[in-house]
Length: 141
Image (tube, rainbow, N blue to C red; front, side, top):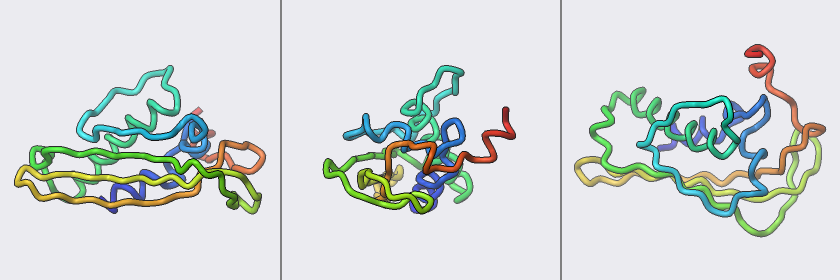
């Protein structure tokens, strides 16, 4: 689960070249994602749909990398919860307002064994003056 949450919450999870979570943190309170449900991407995906699709995709990738079959996973969910208090953090040397957000991933095997991991991250609302756009985005255009 740790190997799933690390890449999912990293800078590599982007939307239009910017960190995905900053694009929708202001609209987030609590979100639950079924990690077993793979979805196709579409041209008109907003950041929340991208977050859902990417979570399931990265979970499937990490399960495969661990040498496990998805048939061994009976249940897998990701819960994303934003703390209501506004806090201050730094993004590329700029002081920004944002929220602490907890990502909690849980999976249950077909044998009933439970695996879980959580990660708490500071997320500021997207600000192109403070953030650097990913070079990956420019290369794919």
